[in-house]
Length: 180
Image 1 (cartoon, rainbow, N blue to C red):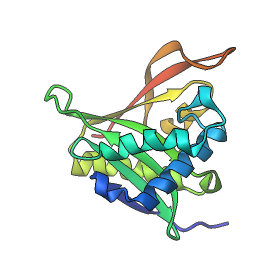
Image 2 (image 1 turned 135 degrees about the vertical axis):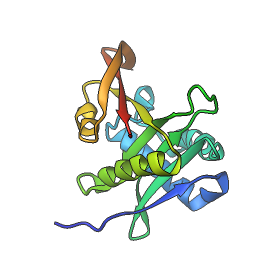
Image 3 (image 1 turned 90 degrees about the vertical axis):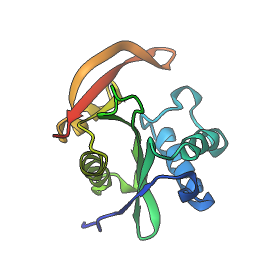
Image 4 (image 1 turned 45 degrees about the vertical axis):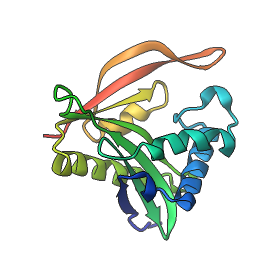
């Protein structure tokens, strides 16, 4: 089965995330979390749109010079997104922090995540002049293998930092990639 390459666009202001897009982002996040994705809300599952919406709105309302969102759409429908946050301090301005990388359950295995991360690296390096990216991932999910394909390495871990359930503690893996 072949899939069309998703259309990617960067959002750099709150106005760029209109109500329809915010609803689609909220639904995606809810569905990914409820499907077991390592995207937050682990202790609130199943999570509703009413719980996700204010968190999504806080992210979208914070879009600007230091925070931008990359959205992937296919045939006019949202299929994935991520957030890139920069640093204002000159000491830290050479790296960015990647969060909320997710694809809709229906888009899994169709190249959407690969397209998102590829564009993330291009824009971070070429448009923003960043040298490094960092991301934190939940241990025992296999996410480190996905990111390793793009050059990320585990540079540290917080043992038992994530309390997913009463008897489920996971390490938080700290990963980084050099863009130059």
